[in-house]
Length: 419
Ligand code: UTP
Image (cartoon, rainbow, N blue to C red; front, side, top):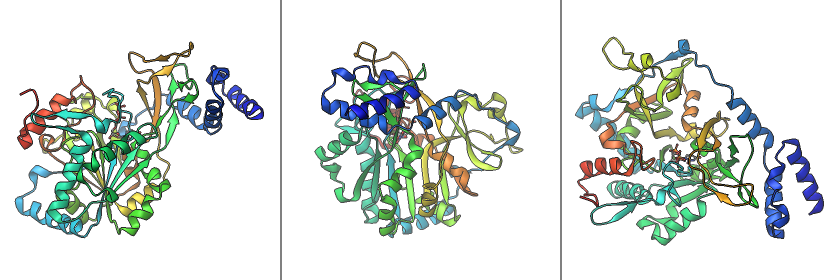
C-alpha cells in the first residue's frame, strides 16, 4: 500500500488536490484502499479541462441561428391523427418499441432523500411514486396492444442500489420483472467554487452522474444495444423520470416519425412567457439544436414568422424517440459537456459532513438533445402542455408537486390528497 500511496500523492500533487488525503491516516485499511483506488482512476486531465473551458463565456453567433420547424398536434385533423396512430399501433403490436427512462439525475433541486423516482405523490385514496406513475402508463399500453414493452431504466452509481431495491420491494408494480433492465450510467467528479474536487466521505471523492446525454454510451457499455438488437427493437423512446404526464409510448408520435422516415423526433411545448428559463429548439449553423435560456434575448423570443407564429418558443420537454440505428450512431459520438451549478453535501476541513445552503459545486453533463445535431431531419411535434407536461423539479418553483398534481387531476379526474 505504501508504493500505491506514494503514486497517488504524486498524482494529487500534479493537480494540487492533496487535500483529498486529509483524513487518510484516520481511515481503516479497507477505506484507504477504496480511496487510493478511486483516485487512481480519476481522469484529472478531463475534469480540469472541462472546468477551465467552462469558465470562458461562450459567445452566441445570432446570425447563425434559425428556427427549427415544428408541427402542432392541435392542427392535425382527426383523419390525420387516425392515420398516424394506426402506423404507430402496428409498430407497437410488432414489439418494435423500447422504453428508456433516464433516472440517473441527482434531483438536487427537489432535495428528496432517495432516488427521485421514489418520491411519492399523495392522492385522495392512495400514494404513487414517480416510478409507479410511469409504470402505470406502460402497463396501460401493454394491455391495449397485448405486448410487454422492454423497459430500460438508467440509474446512477449514487441511486442504482436504492432504485433496484425499491422496485423489488414493490414487486415491480406488477410489471414483468424480466422486461425491466436497470443500467448504471457513468459519473465524473464534482468541482467546488475554488476549483477543487471534494470528498463525499473521508474515504470517498464525490462523483455525480454526467448528464442524460450519457445514456447512449451507457447503453452501449452495458451491452444493451445487443439486447435491443436481439429483441428486434426498431425505435427507442427516451423520457425523464419527473414528468407525470409523459406519454412514454405514444402511437401518434411514433406513427408520425415512421411515416416521415425521421431518425430522431422530439416533443415540444409552447413557451408561454418569453423570458421563462426554458431552453428552446432552434437550428444553429443549419443543424438541429437547442438555445439555452441564458442565450435567449427578448427580441428573439418575441420574433414571429409572416403568419404571426412565434419562431423560438418550442420548449424542450425531454420526450424523444429515435430509430435504433440513430441510437447506435450516437454511441460513437462524444457529446459536448455543459456546466451545471448544483447543491452537494461535502466533508469540510474538520472532517464533518456539511450541507450547503445553496448550489456549491460544478457538475459536467452531456445533454441528450446535443445528439440531434448529428441528424439531417428531425420531427418536432408541439403537444399540449396540459395534456403531456407536468414535471416535478422542486418544492418552490413553477414545476412543483402541487402544480403537477393540479394538471394530473384535471386530466384524469384523480383527486389529490388535500382536496
Ligand atoms: P434534470 O435536468 O431535471 O436534473 O434531469 P436532475 O438531476 O433530475 O435534477 P436537479 O437538476 O439536480 O435538480 C432531467 C432528467 O434527466 C435525468 C434525470 O433523472 C431526469 O429524469 N438525468 C439527469 C439523468 O438520467 N442523468 C443525469 O446525469 C442527469
